[in-house]
Amino acid sequence: MGKVDADKLYRIVAVIQVVLVSGLSFFFNERPVEKVDRPKLGVKRYISDLMGHPIRRRFATLYSSLSVLMNVAVTGGFLVLFAKENLGVSKEDYGSTFSVSTIGPLFLSVPFAIVVERYLSKQLALLVGIAALITALAIGWTAESMDALYWLAILWGIGYMITIVTFKPFFSEYVPKDIIGQVSGALNICWGLGGAVAVLGGALLIEHAFDDNYRSIFPMALAMGLVSIYLAARIPDKRFQERKQTPKSLDR
Image 1 (cartoon, helix red, strand yellow):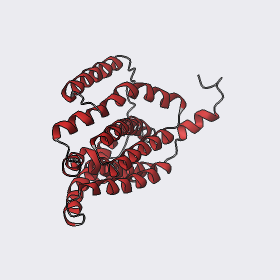
Image 2 (cartoon, rainbow, N blue to C red; image 1 turned 135 degrees about the vertical axis):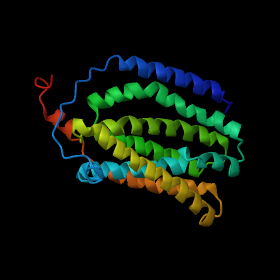
Image 3 (cartoon, rainbow, N blue to C red; image 1 turned 90 degrees about the vertical axis):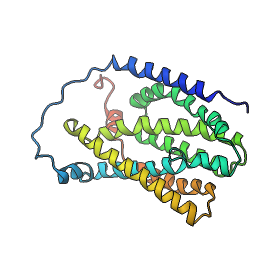
């Protein structure tokens, strides 16, 4: 496959995404959050507001596993080392190849979010996103040339977009409005912890258990993908089920 001008593509996508996000923000019609009397916020309550609720605890565990999956595979920097050390691809060619991962999210993120919100179960959408990531990882595991990285990048971009677009709205359905910022912050700590485990643990395993073979990132990430599939399958989309059971004449 021919090279892509990565710098130009990244800039174009960045500009279009800024325009899209800025444009959509004018259509928000947020209502003030009603204050609810709650105990004083301390470390114990900060943790329990996220981990004390069984469904939110599943989300937190899932977010951590997704962070490990994504960081040990792509965002932690191991994929570029795999391309360089195992496939003999230069960093420039890698950047040119992986830039195609931006195309799917650019054109699909807004339509996909609308479709999921109106017609699909968020649980199903999340499972589809993780499945796309797993498929991308399977392609990477068997890759022998740069051409395979194109398909990995395309599927990874789509899977990443679906997962990220779906996760936070799905999670917010299980959080009271007045603490959603607080709980989302605690959730982001789970992401950070997962990323730290992926980068530090992945580096140690690659060096000491896999003899500096960067192809080992794929089975490690795939294992976390299967864990993520299991966790996501155990989080019901109650709002979607309620909407399905509501007669259309009343759901207006």
